[in-house]
Length: 214
Length: 420
Ligand SMILES: Nc1ncnc2c1ncn2[C@@H]1O[C@H](COP(=O)(O)OP(=O)(O)O)[C@@H](O)[C@H]1O
Ligand SMILES: [Mg+2]
Figure 1: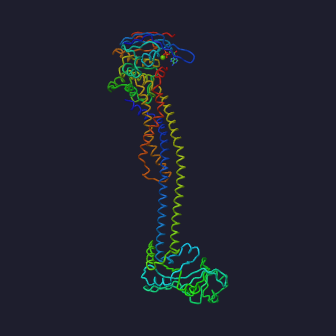
Figure 2 (figure 1 turned 90 degrees about the horizontal axis):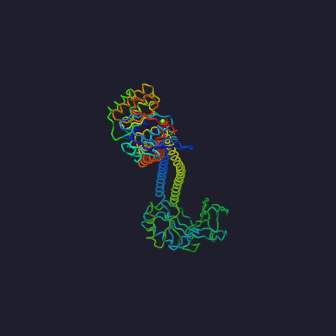
Figure 3 (figure 1 turned 120 degrees about the vertical axis):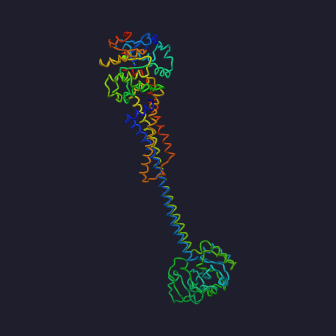
């Protein structure tokens, strides 16, 4: 369902050109849980952003369900993202003035219909955030922040979840909750690309790939 | 949740940012409204002052008019009845009438049924060289008042001069060293000085009054006179024409002119007072206009300056707000929010700042303007201007926030989301 074909991306700084991605190809099946390993700076985040339609590659195509997402206009790609992609970032990117409940509901801003309330509460409860509904991000622990960000990504049940080092800052307890949630997601047919340094993740992942630094 | 509720939540939970933007619009609108209200107050006050002054003047004029009427009634006015062929310019130039008319005219007038004319004083007058004293004198022969036949006799207006006597003006008896009772010769005839007048400061001071008949004999103008003075004629307001008509119907060979009287002087005084009042009002108007021009000039400089600085202030606030919300914009884009909606996020906030700033600023400005003028009146509320402010302030705020909003929408989401 996801075809990454010959993707290249380079960044140009004042004095050098960095080849973050150099001719990468990858196919991921529906319901697959893919773990991505690699040293810092090898281009893992760049790969996820490109896959999610947020970063135009210099070369190559991203096909999701046979749709070349960079053939779409920026506006259509936004709609496509809203329907198909869920993002979780290492830095959570929670909106500071919104409560946990509101942060989880942020994807509704890009959707036509609302998720029924009981489904929202179910999701929040499954991530152990029931007691934190009315708290703002500043009042949360890192684990709670990351779980909130995960709930937000899963609210509209995306086809592909792109997760970037989401367990990097978490203790074992939080990591377990998050990993359980991810496997539940794949069991329901979701596809996951998880960037991680955690070797334990390999147990849950269906497949693990390594990216080497150029 | 939609973009609008997000805007409201951001405003509610980050009050300071909204408040600072609001302050800027309030400041601008208050300044503009305040300046305008001050100008309006100024105009109202000007009107008030001018109206008051005009009313005052009108009142004074009415009083004066009243006086004028009363005096007119009491005094009547004086007419000079002259031969028809008398040139009026000559009369004023020479101080006496040179043309003649029969003395019988005065009797005809006295025999008439005139209700308007009173006190008839016939005279024969001529400027002559007093041969015995080598002086120019005005010789006037008078007969005293001619009583009307059909009216009660009034007390005589002017005592007639007895034959063989004369009344002498101040300048003459003073310079010639004459006193009452002295004997003098005039054109070969002996006269006793009956009376020496006090100085009057006019032609009377070089005048000698003698009996009319004697004057006629001396000047060889028997049965002739130059003028009839009709004193204290009744006449209210403007019906001098009626008097004239009446005289001329009795004496077709005459003309009638009005002698300078107290009434005339009063009327002149009144006109002068009116003009002075008018001048004072004009001066006040000019003064007020100058003040207004100064206010206007001040406002003309202040208003654009304030608008500009307010717009800049808002623009910088929004630039700050946008950069503060980079992460928020990034995640919104990641979940599929469109660029247009990101712009709306900021423009809607700017709109709300503009509208609330307009309302608060308008009434604050109105209050300050009123306080400045010490004039609190509902008439200063200008609906049209209020609506204009309600339109322009949000427009200003939108315009100022537009570039920051575009910056927000154009922001590359990958950049902020990539951060570790
Ligand atoms: N905006 C950028 N400008 C220049 N270099 C960048 C930029 N973003 C990332 N890079 C570089 O590209 C390489 C890949 O980055 P990234 O995809 O974040 O790696 P990873 O997530 O694997 O650590 C790194 O060397 C990083 O320094
Ligand atoms: Mg990374």
